[in-house]
Image (cartoon, rainbow, N blue to C red; front, top):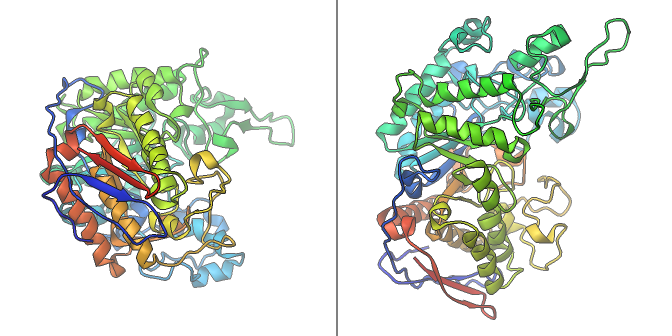
Length: 541
């Protein structure tokens, strides 16, 4: 889709049944907007184009560190013939070891590994810069046995299989405790610090996922509890329901897991219920400092630029306020983003987050109007404005405007399966994520490639994402033309071998347009007109 960069207004037509996609022009209004260095809304975040990386599936730069069967969660449940998957293998074809395990297609997906690692990211930094990306958000990179790493074994070490010496790293950290003085710098840790340096040279900021609500069962503190129960030094770290009684044959040990998942034991709160318990709180503070100022010299320039915080609302508000005060002492310009699916303005204000993943104020209404065409242009405008009006312009400028993520179907498949008849399981969310995962083999789900009309909508959506107020956030692989249903299909390895040049060029063009014009990054937004009969939404920046 050709794009004109010298122009005056933007007009979007959302009718999925129409092939009309018109770009009239853009008017640029530059506004001088500045905040103090200690502001919750760091000035640099207004200029960022975010790119979300799911590390195990982004790029395999070092096959020598690939996961082993022993590194898997519950390896005893996996056949001895297990091997790392070929990166370019067909997703829906089962490997020999999967067939040997029996079951259906879905039953073995959690055991697949493709070998994505930090070297793969380093190798792609120039690609990302050329695309127009100047901010990376990493899904969890800390040591864990799962492919997604939300079940951490540690928050102070990078996963050994993301670095060059997994065996050496595991031996090095074997005797550590929660005391930072016992913490070593592993080969994977050092490679991550190198990645930070390489990113900074290219003007790319880096934030990482923090999961402060829960851990995995093999997290060092919980593993100690499993061995020593109430005698463990970490016994008060977790929300324990009952310890085992050694006098009985039954194991009574029970605890609260996130949403009932016993693989994700939750940290306990203090007696007030408004903060984490002292033990995990102290540990999280120490781990945060480690990655924000790695050499501990008081200069955070060698550390990460911020955090994305998982299931933020599950963690007490009081903890977030104290944690934000602490990390802003380390780096006054640190950026924090909360995973919030509903309205976020009040929550961000009371917990002192900088920003949020903008599901409610961007992704969800975009699906309802630009993808599904099931609401009017004026309704679309009202939904967007409601979220803008709920916060200051400073805060709106740094919201992470995403359309897909590791928790959703990919945008191309959302378009392919668009709902145009206004019958939803969850009408308020337009079934953006209705609580029931949509798998590629769900009856009625079309997992085919985008149609010509779908590609036009996709390209228009990319343009809107790059020009609307807030910071665009691209999910890895979307720009190369990937499509898929929700988790686990949305976590396929990147299609480097089958890149869609037209889609890639569109993203590169619209992101460069954003970088070229300050008004698209820092300017105000005015809605010029909406026409419900033609489904047109026009605005200027």
